Length: 296
Length: 239
Image (tube, rainbow over all chains, first blue to last red; front, side):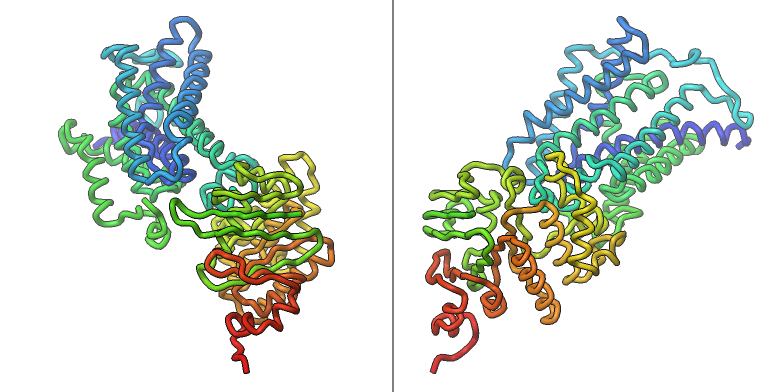
C-alpha cells in the first residue's frame, strides 16, 4: 500500500469513526440518565439530514442546518414526553421495546414524507471533486468538516458535563437518580433534556455527513448498530472511550476494504459486536465491577 | 413543623404503614426506633414523597403534602439523608455538596460557597477530601458527606435514615455529636434508628414503630426507662 493510499483510508476511517462515536455518545447520554438504550438514536441522525435537505430548498445551508437541528431536538423532546415520561418505574425491557417501536415509527413517517429516494446536502465548500492535499493524499474538504464539527461537539459536550451546573445535575442524575431527586432536582426533566441533547448531536452529525454518505429514510438502523457496537466496545456510558472505540471501528472498516470485498464491511461491526458481547461485555475500557452493577 | 395524621402507605397492595400519627415541633430531635422491617424507612420516604400517601395526611409547615412531588418537598425545606448514604459516588466531594445546594441555587439565593465552607467546618474531614471522588470515601466519611449534602439545602427539617448503620462506634459517636450540634444551632431533626440506645440518648422525644404501627411514644428518657423498650430494643433483660 502506498503512503498516499494509507492516508486516504485513514481519513475515511476517521470520518466514519467519529460519526459512529457521535451516535454512541447519543446512546450514552440517554443510557446514563435512564439506564436504557434508545434504539431510535439512528433516526435522529436521519431526521437531521433529511430535514436539513428539505429546508435547504428555501434557505441557505447554515440556516437549514440550524433549523433541522432545532426541529430534531423538539422531536426528541416530544418522543420522551409522549412515550417515556409518564411511565412509572417501567422495566428496562419495556423501555427498550418502546424505543424500537419509536424507531420504526420514525422511519415510516420519514418514508411517507420523503419517499425512498436518496438525497444529499450539497458540499459545504466546493463540490464532489474539490480536494485538499494532505501528505500526498487527496481529501475532500467535507471530510474535514465532519471531523472538525464532530470533534468540536465531543469537546463541547465534555466541557458541558464537567463545568456547567446543568451538566453537573445531569451527571448527578446518572450517578444516583434517587439521590438527585432528594437534592430537589426534577429528574424527569433531566431525562427529557438527555433526549433533546442526544437528538441534537445526532442531527448535527446527520447534516455534516449528508454530502458524503447521503441521506435516506432508512439509514437509521445501520448507524444505530454501528453506534451501539461502539458504545458497547467502549463500555456503556463512557463517552471518552466511545470516541476511541468509534475511531477504532471506523479505521478497521476502512482498511478492511483493501483486503476484503466491500460487501463484508458491515459484517465487521456486527462480528465485533458479537465478539465483544461474548468475551468482554463490559467493553474494552469498562470495568467488569461497574458493569455488574448495571441493570442492563 | 411536621404533623402526620392517620397515615397509611405502602407498595402496591402491601400496606406497610398503618394509621400512623405523630408530630415534630421546631427545634426538637425526635427519633423513631424499631426493628428491621417495621416501616421506618417507608415512613421517611412517604414524608419525602418518594412513596405515595395511601390515606391520611402529612402536613409540613402548614402545607398538605398530598400529591406534592419529592423535588417540591425538598425545595420547601424538608431534606432526607437516605439510608445507605447514596452519595454521588462518581462525583467529587465538592460536587456532591454543590448539588446539595441545588434548591438554594434554583431560588437564586446564592451563598452556596459560604454554605460549603460551613459544611467543611462541621465536617473537617470533607475539606481534606474536597477533590476526591465520593465513592472512594470510607463509610463514615460518606455518611458525613450525605449529611452535609442534605444540610446544604438549609432545610427546616432534616430527616436521617439509619445514620449509624455499618459504622464503627467511635464514628457513630462523632456523627451523633454533629446531630446535637445541629439542634443547638436551631435545626429540627427527625432521626430514624435501629441503634435505639444511642438515638434515645440524644433525642427529646421518641416513637416506637412495630410492624407499621406506633406502639409507644413519649419523652426519650421515659422510653429509655420503659421495660418493654428495654427488653425489645436495648437488649436488657427485665428482672
